[in-house]
Length: 55
Image 1 (cartoon, rainbow, N blue to C red):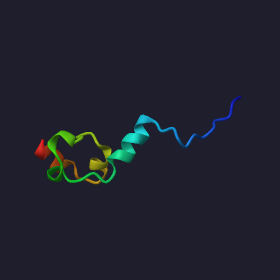
Image 2 (tube, one colour):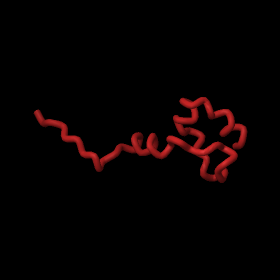
Image 3 (cartoon, rainbow, N blue to C red):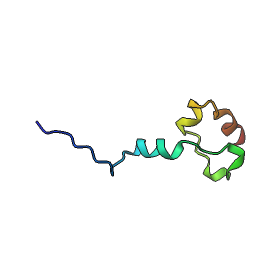
Image 4 (tube, helix red, strand yellow):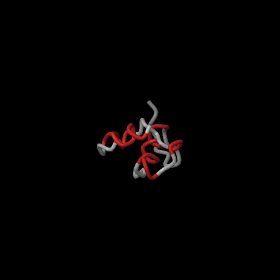
């Protein structure tokens, strides 16, 4: 059986989205083309309403 080795340089797409999605500005503080309506942080922080209102 092989042992899993942690590689700190490797991130999954899900990890990358979680890192980049944290601390995002408000929907009216950023260009509309930069808004990601499926950012999980918006739902976790209960800020999704403003995003969909702007879109």
